[in-house]
Image (cartoon, rainbow, N blue to C red; front, side, top):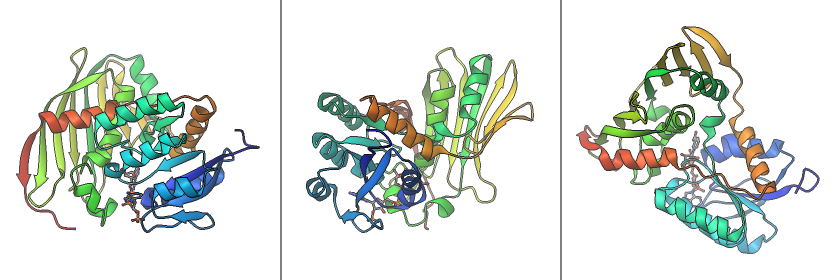
Length: 310
Ligand code: NAP
């Protein structure tokens, strides 16, 4: 499987992220050829379309890999069917609705000898590597994460996101945790309060405290009620200066000076990584961000707040 013999791909779950990112990234990557799609309603031009993955797998046996872009509640069954059919699997973040289901997929993929890639797109943001390098040679004193956005602007009409397993504010928040688990020493949650609107099955905000292995406090604030400027920031006080990774991983500043920024190329990089994994018959399934979300739901105090209407 090289550019001369691209990997035959299918997209499963044709919604916003499939259209905004996966289809353009695949169209530009010579290591892949999109041959089919499956979604209850959505369709992709110029490929075979089906309403479910089972029919797709039967009808198009030449498919070698699938990208799963549907909400997390529906991921496991689709991934299992694809792995059992001997296909490589790329899973959008978050890789599933529970930690155990993804662990089982990992075991199954290893048994079947196929690649399983649990992708964390925010780790590929342009200033994340530079931040990791900066923090790797600094002594961190304290850290904070502020991930605050307007849910009406970014998630209109997404009912699944408010259902159990849709994660609520942890849907964007897990992006912050995917960066934090890459740039900070290992950490664990020590306290959490989750704000659930009285009419919804998932939280609209969460305030949490984490602590790293060596005792550094990390204050985490997720909120979906922020109008006006949006905040996707990770901050740290260190002996080498005050660092801010802002814009969801786009810009690194230290003591107010921009150290790294660049154009966003997350999804092209994710597909490069997937091609590498498929060619090397390897998997990449880091469950740390998902585990933190599970721990927040396990440890967190549930606070009922006013009803939320779109
Ligand atoms: P979305 O616009 O609601 O799209 C999800 C699509 O999944 C729906 O259009 C639906 O297709 C399809 N679907 C539902 N059940 C399915 C099933 N059983 N099998 C196949 N397809 C099914 O949501 P989204 O924003 O694309 O998010 C999808 C996933 O990507 C989420 O896990 C989210 O966290 C992740 N993600 C989203 C973004 C973003 O910016 N939006 C960024 C990164 C990651 P039909 O329309 O055909 O019914």
